[in-house]
Amino acid sequence: MRYGTGLAACAVLIQAAACLAQQPVWQPTLAEARAAAAETGVPVLIHFTGLNCIHCTIMDREVFSDPVVQRSLRSNVAAVLVNRDLDAAVAAKFGIDRVPADVILYPDGQRDQHVGRKGRDQYLEILSRAGQRRQTPPRRPANSEARPLPRDQQRLVQTEAASGSEIAREESGTAELVVEPAVNSDDPGMGGYCPVTLRLKDTLQAGRPEFSAVYQGVMYRFSSRENHRKFLESPAKYAPQNLGCDAVILTKEHRAVPGDARLRLWFDGQLYLFSSDKSRQEFRSRPLPYTRMRSAVRVEDIQRTRMQ
Picture (cartoon, rainbow, N blue to C red):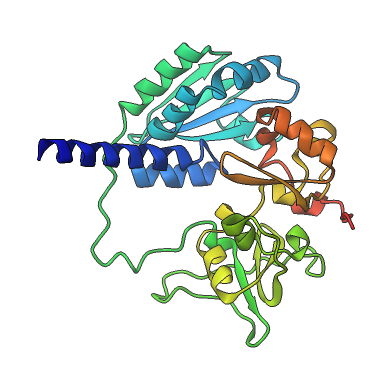
């Protein structure tokens, strides 16, 4: 009996470890990091980097690539990357004038700031101390169905050819989806391929115009009503990073060049598209420097040239 109980306990631990490993190390945006922290009771960690920052590159290579550091980031904080040179308003808000720098926002409203390059062990100590100040998140009411929509869903508009353009409402009527027109509805994101099918099956399948949604100014198409629904529930999970632009060109040349869904890579659970195989191989060889740019691109900056 004890032997069987021990095996069951081991199975639970292994399953928990596997789930943790599948969680992203970095939240896509500061807003989503705050939301994740509020849900789990952990502090928010904002790691500020910058363009041409040698010490930032060293931390990428020696600290953030370490599996132990990655596990600690997942379990102790809700972490997000911010580029000081590209997100100047956020950097100014927290008084960041040197990078690398880390700001930790605790659930009780207090905060810590650490400036300068940190080694692996030093950074792990910072994360451990932050994790010790987590708080138990407030319990949701039993009738939690009547809750506001997540922030990313509030930026979506649903378009159905059969019913025309409508502003979607949550069944409870407590929130309204804000219409955000696509910059170019004739040029769908990902070349018109369904992002949900790509994530779930790693297969390129053309989306249908009657199943469309706009997220962050980009219109995506879906191969079925079910995939359309899944995207609306969690758009950040399926949409490519950098609005689908080539992360290597964005980082090196500061140009927003659309990537091609046929030239893709997955990193830290997120989808990246590239405009050439050269860019894809460059990203594959050292991905961390190019994941810093995920919040820098604006949809109006995207160059309307796509691979044929």
